[in-house]
Image (tube, rainbow, N blue to C red; front, side):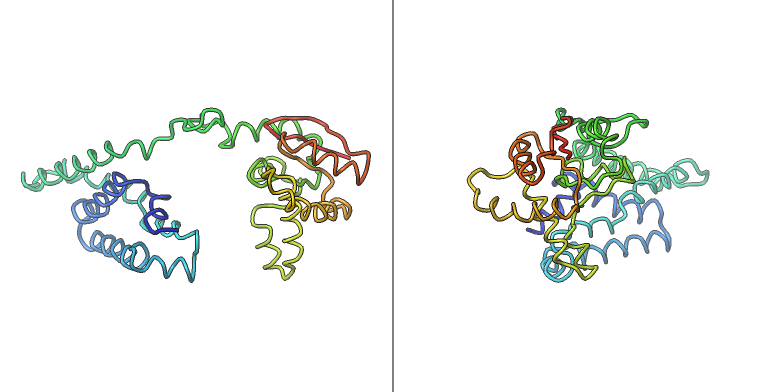
Length: 278
C-alpha cells in the first residue's frame, strides 16, 4: 500500500493535511505555550519523523503493521489538539495582554477556522450512500447499518442461541453486538484467532466454509468446487446449525444444505440476507 494512500485513508486529502499541520503547529506553540506546549509540539514532530514520513513508512509496513500502517496516524492526537483550542479563550480575555499578543491569537485562531472550513467535506458525515443508510443518526439510534438491524430484528428469535455461519462483511460483524448469546462460526480474522490458539487448521476450515456462502465470481466455479467440501464438513460436524447467505447465493447454498439434510429450508429474508435452518 503506497504511503500517501495509507495516510490519506485515515486523514483525507491535501486540505485535511493542511488543516492538521495548522493545528499541530499553532495549538502547542501559540495557544498552550510554555513547557507543555513545547512538549506537545516535539511529540508531534517525533511521531511524524519516525512513523509518518515516506522514508521510513515502508519499514513499518514490511516489519510491523502491514496494511494497518494507517493506524499510526492516530498517534498524532488530533482530537486532543482540537480540544485544546479552548486555550485561546483566556489569551483573548485576560487583562494586561498586549495588543500584539491578542492580535497574534486572533490571527492564529482565524487560520484554524479557515483550515477547518476548507476541509469541512472531510469531516462531515452527510450520507455518502443513502441506500445503506450511512449518514447522520440521532443519539438514540444504534450506529449500525439499517440492513443489518433489519436482519437482526427479523431473525433474532431464530438465531439468538444458534451457531451461525454468515459472511463477515454483512451482519456477521454486528449480530454479536445485538445477540450476545449467539455464536458466529467464522468471525472476522477467524484464521488469526485460531492460529494464536495453536489450531490454524480450524481457522482455515471455517474461513473456507464462509467463503463458500459469500458472493462469488461465476467464472470461478473451480474454486467453488474446492470450497464445498469444507462447507459440508462445518455443517456435518455441527460447527454451524444456522446459515445466513446473500439473496443471490441462497438457492445454491440451500441446494447444498439439502443434499446433506433435506430438512434445511428457507426461513426468511431481511436486510439482503436469507436465513436457512434445518
